[in-house]
Length: 280
Image 1 (cartoon, rainbow, N blue to C red):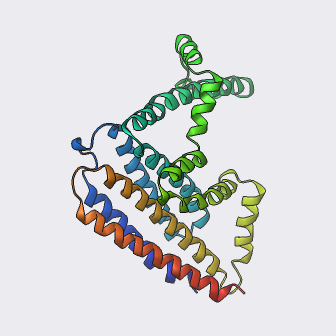
Image 2 (image 1 turned 60 degrees about the vertical axis):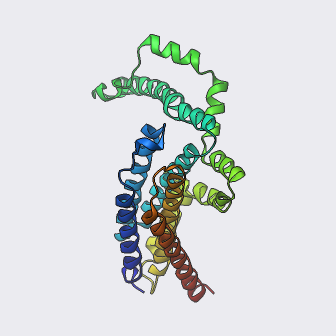
Image 3 (image 1 turned 180 degrees about the horizontal axis):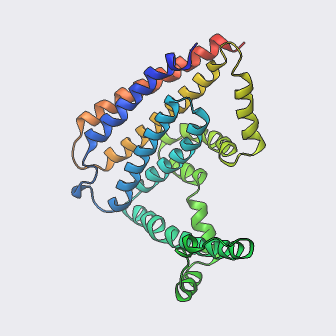
């Protein structure tokens, strides 16, 4: 089995669906869809771009690197769905936390990290510290933000916006998210590839060592199809949440979403077939 003999057709079809959806939904920003779109629309389009990047990596056999991007795509998708769900008051609170509070807390953290980096650079090298100085805040701003966000407040907000807790809250209020709870393990396992710990490095080394064996790329194909299935599933969740809030009927998008659902099922069925044929 040659990797691209199998993967190419699925990747190409996924790309067609992704492009078709973004054009069918456009313009994504619609005044009649209400508040908070200054956050949700950029998040939606950025996640679409990352999905396309994953397909490019898969096309060139970069399955492990695609998995790293998939982790970020999963987190971004759940954040998008989290922002889109709840009562008007819930959505307003999430909007404030996401755009204002988490942003300001991150700016404060960046300030301290850059301050530390500058000290280290000055001590151990003669390199310019200009790039790090861009994140340095003035003393009044630092004092104000430190007063505004106690450790208790920071921990509470950050905890709410973890992948696990966002997904749990979504599943509690919408049974469609219950099956996605299974991604908690996948999301956690992907961290090995992100951080290059021995678990992740060992997995990739096994791939390299086994690549000379006959039909070794069966496993790359399985890996590719699993990533592809997840990419398209995440797309469906984002589209579903967008359609629920959209005030303009988009029958073409709904029709395409159903086609994508069938496509995802085809990928999963084919993946299971390969496993049954090759795993004793």
